[in-house]
Length: 298
View (cartoon, rainbow, N blue to C red):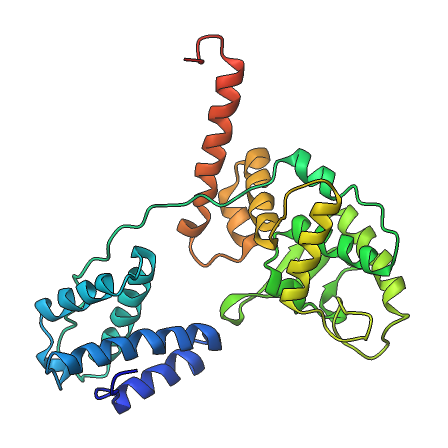
């Protein structure tokens, strides 16, 4: 890495601020730090030693350098977001009078719609007939993730004490250490009860709901591999955990049309994040229209 010439106490304070005060995860804080170190190195390379000397041309030159380094538009958006947050912090703390990044716009990214399982695929996946403790556990994991739209990291971090009202609800610690309550469907409850009976054979001390046969908490990577194996066994292509979350949201939207509730269930801080599923729902409607309407087919 080039000499980190422009790493100031303000940058150190900002990283501490987003981690301690804004309560961002360690991974997110480290991502901001990496982005801002790249900016620091760029400023050093063009001879800028004070935040007050940064101009609009400096900002656009930095973005151009990110393009030259083969960063994709989504990555550049994140870099710019990091810079905007930092310079907003500097302005708030009277280090600068105005942010040079305030009016800078990031390149648009092509929107890739998430992969979603059809209800028939989900039914096929969940028709697994467990033959051992591992498959009983795996079925409980998949039933739970699809029932409540959980992230794989959230699933791995569930503790036995997180259930409320006789397993009707589950307390989830999501991104940014935000807690939400999610309901559980009857199939998920049944599968979890089957697993907890088996679980007693392998640990009576671990807090984790999902453990391996040595009694240790199941890792995210292990869940990913077990889901892939389960899908193949059920005659489906390999499935990654986030497909279950996307499928949950899409199937809920198709049935209810209630985007705000889906936002709450998914733990999205912004409704705009959830709106990706309206596009998926629209695609679904177009498919139905093409199949059903006598004058739709070209």
